[in-house]
Length: 385
Image (cartoon, rainbow, N blue to C red; front, side):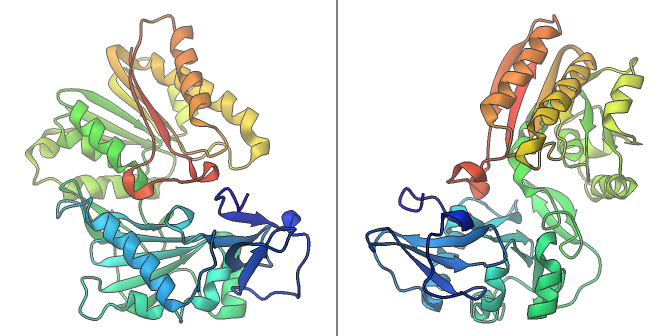
């Protein structure tokens, strides 16, 4: 797999080690004929035993190499976004050649998220690459994947939400997305504080929103609702089971009331289980329904129940659409492949008995580009019923 460019070496693929390795060491991979294959970060605590940094010809991996990789990733994003967007992914782990490491920007704050303990021994070594003196970033925050938090604190002295450099701040960070203002909680929020990966789909809903009513299922902090309102939607319902999320949705609306369209949009927040609410509120119909649930298949064994849940959800969402209404169905489950998901939505539309037209399908935004199969998770399909 390393020869073909895959970024992971699993523990059961390691046939022999010359010695026991330590967390974060560079592991050099050879094939059965003792030919160099790759070099990567060693993680004895993970089934992904080595995360590949470089494959092919031999390469010196030192701080200058890391600095170059990180600088290149940052530069690619800066060429994509202008001043109207100050929230985006700067480093996307394996797909930027830095496996298990993600960096997101929220205005003047950077959030560094680590998914493997292999990076922890190198954080201080890499510190100069996040030196904020004279730069536009005032804070660098460390976030840790839940499964490594205890080990990170016990062995390396790092904790989730720790400020690595810059100012210890209180309250949310406000950033821009296509000119709209949103809040992020880099210290405690889900992922790195916001779902930046749905930026392009939010913008598409904004373009479709004029004069329409919107139902935003699994709304979290209301991103799709704010975007639709900015596009001229007459009303938006943000529905989520979490009151904490709905409070954030109300604050995000308030942040954008200077926009005349947002001010005119009637925004309603509903705390409910989406599956139950769709079955009970049979008298409510909408012009646009956005279905963007959390991952319904976090592991391979959950695939069958995920398909069943997606089917119920999409069928119920279609029943809430006015004639000529738009369905925006999204999935962030990596274990549900995009073609499988699109086919499931199409089949739900066929079973509804209503005429339907497929408008488009979408995948990852440019700053979240995936270069290997396991990295592909986000997909969306737009349909008119």
